[in-house]
Length: 308
Length: 249
Image (cartoon, rainbow over all chains, first blue to last red; front, side, top):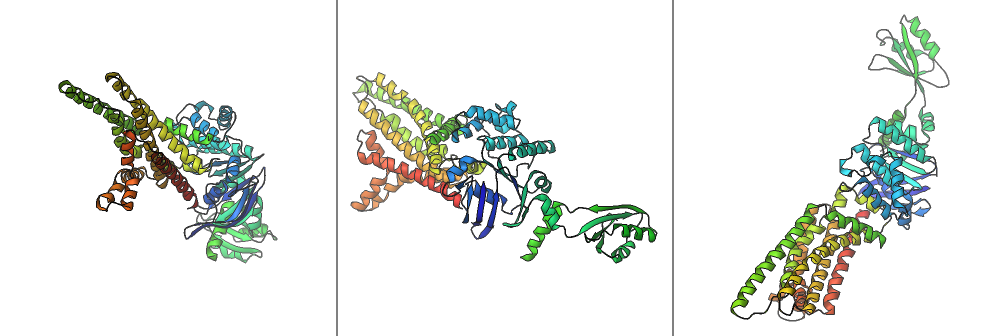
């Protein structure tokens, strides 16, 4: 549904995105993950027909984003980062205006449907200016869903929502993502982990990794880690643990616990436990630590920075 | 066509909830009303002592041109500049409509609002018609109103184009005002210093006020109509190009 080939965008001398190639299939939720200024919004603006790329091309819902921009725009629902609303209109008027621009045959029914979907049907007659941030976000989503688009592009859809609304929003997005293509951007890693079938990690305008959240985690974890907590100071224990065969590294954490890495092929934990007891310490905790997407992300973006 | 109408309708409605539009309507109608009463009073006092001709419709339409010169920038300044500022431009530019439809729709909204004011001002010729023996010259009425409608189309098209260039309403206002003043009158200034001839004629040809006065006087040429429509089209085209350029930046 979305096929981007070599997308590049220059803002004057500054290159915002460079040679982005990716695709998103029908019924797939793809997440753009990256720090602020990584080029997520730029990419989305190109795909929605807001602006053309400097180089490269893309097809959305089977149409070329430059030559057949209007056709693309007809089939895409877009929620920009700053929700575009007219404060002087009521919720219903605003959505009806968008329905008219999209030539929806039974516009009023579709407005009602979209409002019901985001749980705002009781606020249809309220003015947009009186809505809270979370409600505005929902109206923005209703606007994007209005014409039941084949492709949904959401720029930071859960930003500024309270935790309950975030859960609600994610449920809606997951529901939509079952049938249609959803491309969303976020810098919240747990969100990408929960929502997306596939994650594209983007940094400084380039894709640095692309996979399912699970695979990314597995692929990038080169070593297993475990945390060890004992009664008292662990400082003297560190060299003892480091000498055990299979332990790759030991470091003392700020909270006084001791973290060590070991190769996945050799589980050293029983050996470590014995060493602790043999040294005369009381063992309180010995548990594995999975590498979170957060750390993967940091690792990737930092590696990327070092290369430069 | 449908998209133009959707955009125009929203703009037209917006005027009725915005203070600027009410101020524009108030200034226009109040000023014309006061001027009308003053002129009528003066003329009837004159007529008491000696025979004098009744005023014609130019006392209404002539004033409107000056007022529109000042109020058109206020009506058009926010049309596209405000969409840019509020971020709703992103909504419109990713909706399935062409850039020119957006610009023409915006212009049409402001034009319809101005037409409403022009429509209301028809009260004065009507009053004048009942006050004068034999009524007013209907041909003159037609040509005067045609002149003000053509002129406001030009003013608003230029304002719409300039609004597309700015994301600050006030910058758009002053740039529009300066452009309109130039086209209305300033552009004919070189004729005072240049020797009479082709070049001097060109400047005279471009100025809108000479044409307007001739039309209000009852003389409408094809050149007048073509010139006004060309300027309107040029304004709308410039606006569409300005929106298009925004995309590429």
